[in-house]
Length: 111
Length: 398
Image (cartoon, rainbow over the protein chains, first blue to last red):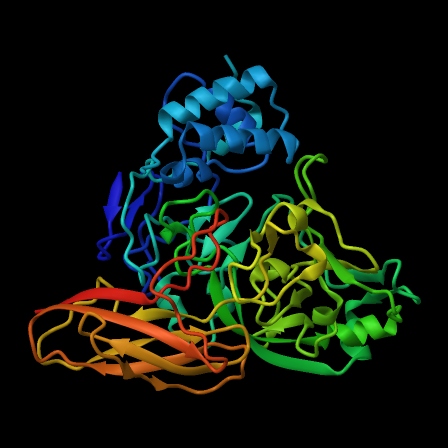
């Protein structure tokens, strides 16, 4: 479900499980919800593998948040950085599946 | 098919999803930037959740309006996910390294009691503040305007602590580590260094209070480094280890992250870490943020309205803030508020003319006492740092 705030640019999305009472003060029409792990990724081939590997170290809102900056080449660079620099336990075959998934679902780079 | 582990299932059951993947979106300067999920960390008020783990939470624009940014709304930025709660009584600060002739360890009580106490107002701004407004977009935490704040930091001078450890003449850099650690042993620990001169500067502090209160957990309890004028990456939280050394520190977070093209910005050099291509980010650039009006503000014809915001630089102080309401044809000086010190931000205000209905394009540019002015264009860099373009907000008078 979506909650549209007074602020035209601000769209909040959350599950119905959230509570909407008790907005403390002037932070838009913000619901007051405890911060929580984000685990939702788009359906698609390779999603479970991508989720399973990425959440070892970080929650996955990084993925949709970065989509506007990403294309296949950028995802390849990022996945390689996770493997080589951060020690992500991802085999090369898995890396290819993750790359296919992210390229197909989270590549929003324009120009 | 990869099955969800128990941990993953638990996380999924926590009952939250991110905003759907975002398309390309124009975010006006002055807004908090992009879609936003507001959420509450323990001990905090609602902040914009850029990432839950490691926690990266941004201060909403409205909370940048007070002169001091409240501890409960101050932004949170981590690189690593394992963040221990540290009991003040068991915390120890180790000070050593090859260029420390008399290594020492300090308890919090010893740190507080052994050196003169200093308070200093300073802006803490993440290097990547406004990365989400970059064009073209670059990867990283997609911050809007709120990866920053201004606080009164109380602690002791780093140089007093270093002198007690007897700094050798060959000292080149001072290296800082905090208690946060990576999930995987193979992930580089978050460790940063600064040049010895910057470490011995009288403004560099080890702080244990923020706005008169003990440091909040999410902002580095029980003690953190304060490097006024330099971006937040050097302000090590949960500080546990200080090493004085005669060589350049070669960790990942110095050699491969937080770097900008050499010579691209008029900021302090970090010579021992410089290569012909890139160099570490150091000082903040002169900059400003409009806190009021926002694009959401309803301005009524003939009713009083006020422009307000904050301006800052790396420590020369703000000389003037100029405002244009006619598409940058002419500029007027805003009124500056209290001077809290050269490392703090400076409030600015200007009454707005609402006598005519229609769109209003308000542009703001700050000028520092060193003569630097905010530019109209972005100096693009792959890390998404140093966006100090003239701030513009579009509102409608009706």
